[in-house]
Each structure stands twice: as C-alpha cells, then as structure tokens.
Image (cartoon, rainbow, N blue to C red; front, side, top):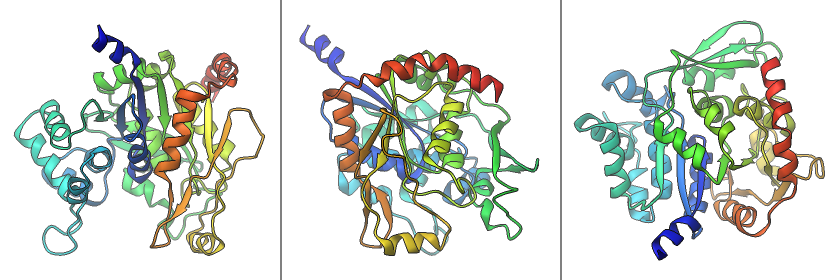
Length: 350
C-alpha cells in the first residue's frame, strides 16, 4: 500500500529535444526528488560521429543525442565524463565513447535490450531516455523559395552556403522522408505525462524533428499534461533569423497541435562581450516581452562558462520547474487549455 502511494505521488516529466539544451535540462531535473523523467530525443542526426556510424556502420540517427542525454542523467560524474570523452585524432577522431558503446550494444542485441543495458550501466533508476523512433528516416526542409534541403546536417549548416539569404531561404516546413512512427513507449510516456517540457535547442534540427514521427502530435494532444516551453537564449543563423519569442513559440505550438501552458524565458543579463562574440555568427538574444502574457515566467537562465560560451543554467531550470510543478499552480493554464480548439483550427489552416 505504501509502495502504491509512492508511485501515485511520483510526478512524471517528459522532456523533448536534442543536443546540449536537452542535456542541460536533464542535469538540473535529476536533482529534484519525487519525479520520474523520460527524455525523448530526435532520430534524424546525420552529421559528425552519429552520421559516420549511421552511414558506415548502419547506426541510428539517434545515437549522439540519446547518449548525451543519458550521460546527463547519470548520477556518476566519472561515468558521465568517460561517456562524453571524444577522441581528437587517429582513426577514432570525432567519435565519443558513448556513441561507440551504444552503437555496439544495438549490434549485439535488440534496441530494447540495448537501452535497458545502458540505463542500468548509468544507474538511471526509474528515469528513461528514448529515441523518438528507431525507423530509418531523413529530415527534409522546404524553403520559402520552394527548394528542398535533405539531411539534418545540411539543414543545420544551411547558412554556410555562400548564396544563402535569410529573406529567401528561411525554412517554411519540415517533414520526414520516409515517414516514421514514434515508438510505443514514447507515445505512452507522452499520453501519461504530468508535465511535458520542450527543451531549448536548435528549432529546426533538434526540437521540431522530435515532434514529427506519427503518434507524437496525437499523444501530446490527448495528454492532460501541462506543457512548458523553455525558450532559447539566442537565435540561430540559418534557422531562426529575425525570430522573436512569439515566432519561436508559435512554430512549436503549430507542430504540437496545442498551446503551451507556461513559457520560461531568460531574465539574466548577457554580458556585452558575449553578445559581441555571438553577433559575429549573426546570433542575437531571443527576448520575450515582459508582461506580454500571464503564462510567461522569467528566470535567470543565462550563464557563461570559463570558455565564454553561453548556456542555460541547469540549477535555475530545476528550481523554476520545481516551483511550477509543485509550489505554484498557475491559473492561466485553464485559459491556455481552453484555447486548444482555436489552435487546432489555426494549425489546420496553415
């Protein structure tokens, strides 16, 4: 009876996204007691180590993001550092231990058993990290001018083309070719979640690709979970040029098929020297209008590491989400939920 009560009291959080932004969220969340985490990662990575393993050794497009999030969730820092160790020269150059380990696990056993093995190895306990799909598929983008770009790595580096123009070559639509279906475990986690968190990250190469497989949108729409979006700190050249916070949110809500209940945005000042460095890459701060909506929650997310790189602070993410989940029910959620029907109509028209 006590065990059953404990299970009922556990708050199930599902996190969505890829890359560093998702791992930063997980690094914070794992320290919150009374929660169970399921991380869902994209399966369309085609560059770097994952791309090599995919093209040369029949690996999955989920390896890099999946294992980065698993490393972020492990309570053993030595294991985390070992997993993320990346070789800098020789035949293993660009490969990390985590990528090669998980690729090997999938080659000697089934995906399910490979996941079980690495979760146990990293002592995740009740927490889980899943690829959104294990089906082979390619991420494709239709540009405003009508051209199609195939491959996540090409979309990720779109602005490196010398002919690229943000006014002409902005991304209009994303899709998978061929279409893919979300894992049953992913659909179940989304349907049963108490809170769904859309993590910061590259909008068109990390976040939205995780929402594309069949079953994800439907599971989110049928879920009674509270939806939380954590906004990026900066825009990204080639993907979100000239985007405002409203543009970013609207795009995510379009692909989810329902509005977010809470939006967490940065309130910490970013040093001018850091702004200048990022401006060289044509990245600018993504700001939210203060007081633009009651659902907006400011938090001092931004921090700069010793290398001058800008990140979202895991401790601040954790404390902000803990307050939202446990301490401060927000009456605006009812308003957001009542607006879902209108959002469905807008999505169908778009």
